Length: 393
Ligand code: SAH
Ligand code: SF4
Image (cartoon, rainbow, N blue to C red; front, top):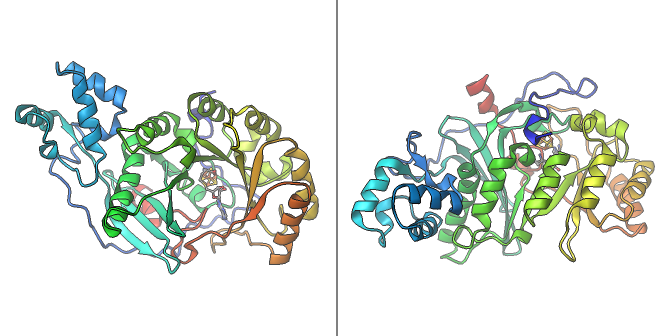
């Protein structure tokens, strides 16, 4: 089954849903920091940032231009500060003018930028159709991880996740995914005099990346192309709630890291928390993980959100040990990020540590991850934008 075919509607969980709408997310109109070239939003023009190098090569060939021009243009598109064809100085003026008539270079408009005390920055980007997405830049000892969104909202309806309560508005284009990276990279480089860089990319923002597989795949092509953003695949992690066909396809077509939002050690609990488990259960999911072609010394990241009284008992930890048997993985324990709108609470510290201890005793690497930027609602599962509701409802 194609990943897109899975769950097109949000499935509010009857047991956990409080039936309340999202509230309490402050929203300010401010900081429109991008200066856009005139044609950057004209959707009748081809957005060149939406094309892989191969697609751009075909586009250029159709114009009757030599194919090597595509590589020249492609490298310009991802250089810091480039926003118009007029800056592409090794192209003939007549060709640049022609490009301006048929193509555009999109960029993202910052709607709001918030910085937490720990240096985490949350960006809300306003898209051409007025919807909003969020990206989170997380500094750590001079390194930076960017958490990117893959969809506006999410159809998967996980009971504990605020993004899930929004439902799916739409998939992001490859350009909208890549532009999150370009915008933050440019800002970081400008701030650090060309020295700041994004070291890791994680698809853990809004949305289920494998439910938008084609655009994810094309965005990855642009991100890893050495004429594009030049990211090494081992610095990219795609996180999924468990779309098995998408996992298989990703493993066959790329070498990026895989993170699995497991969150429960038995089907009963997992199906209550993640509706996708009713389509692909734990056995099917872990089989896909075991078959995932992992390069040497790499492991799958298992994410496990700890929800008080639901999946945090020593029995759950022991069951987790059993089901992960012989899977090359490391486990991230995420104490639940609480929100007033969802009825889940984080366990006591001692409960979290006991859970971790059981996994460690069994030989697993298990790390307790405290989300960063919680006070600006930048933490895992907190990305949702009230304004998307009012615009699209
Ligand atoms: N859709 C993908 C990627 C985005 S979610 C996925 O689910 O994997 C990023 C991570 O945040 C996931 O592991 C998700 O389960 C976790 N998350 C969601 N809600 C959370 C919450 N309330 N507290 C802690 N982590 C949460
Ligand atoms: Fe979607 Fe991931 Fe949130 Fe589930 S946890 S609703 S898949 S964003």
